[in-house]
Image 1 (cartoon, rainbow, N blue to C red):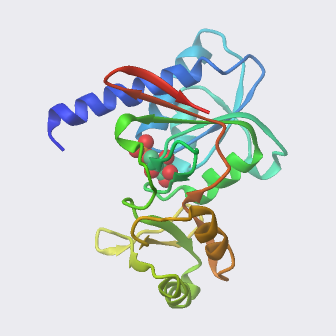
Image 2: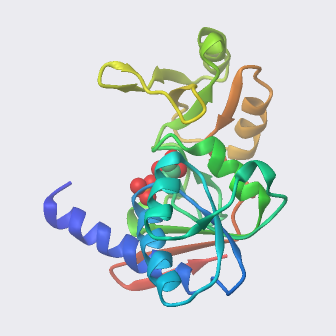
Amino acid sequence: MSTIDKTQQDAEKRVAALEAVKLIKNGDVVGLGTGTTATFAIEEIGKQVAKGLKITAAASSKRTEDLAKSYGIQMLDLQTLGSIDISIDGADEFTESLNLIKGGGGALFREKIIASLSKNRIIVTDASKKVAQLGAFKVPIEVIPLALQYVMDQVAKLNGTSTLRLLNQKPFITDNGNFIIDADFGLIAQAEHLAEALNQIDGLLAHGLFIGLTNKVIMAGGNGVVVFE
Ligand SMILES: O=C[C@H](O)[C@H](O)[C@H](O)COP(=O)(O)O
């Protein structure tokens, strides 16, 4: 991607994020996503908190938690939360039917917990994330390390090709101490079925197919903001 494209994409991410933050009300418990788009939302929430917005929040990753704290946002422990009023997060791909692939940043497990707890799940994206069919982006899968080969073999039975995610030539380690494999299933004809099949695999902590976990996608593109709900 050229610098101009990246600048345009960042501008779109920011517009979408700011639009989502307008939905937050005083007193809300807010779920904070992870990634570059969620970061724009967290920065804006921080500005609103400085101006007097009263909220508490839960983070989907250590880096989000650190960022939110740096903006003075009061953080809650996800472990003790029974419900979240609104969550704002990014996505790697989405369809008009509001199915997503998430986990490009490796935060999918906590993001899924936040989405599951949340009453109003908002996804913010630039226009590049909209697809007719999921699957050009590989499906991130968080795996308990000792089950790595087993999970890769099960993924192969579902016609997926697994690649262990690396960082500095070592396995990428999630906030939960696990590995990520990026699984290529090609274009996914029936995302619901694949999600169900992946859910059955022991040792697979979470996969990046988010099915029925989104209320609204706010997408910003060259022609302004489009909302899918
Ligand atoms: O684990 C990371 C998350 O699922 C992100 O929301 C996703 O990867 C999109 O990230 P970004 O907003 O940086 O494109």
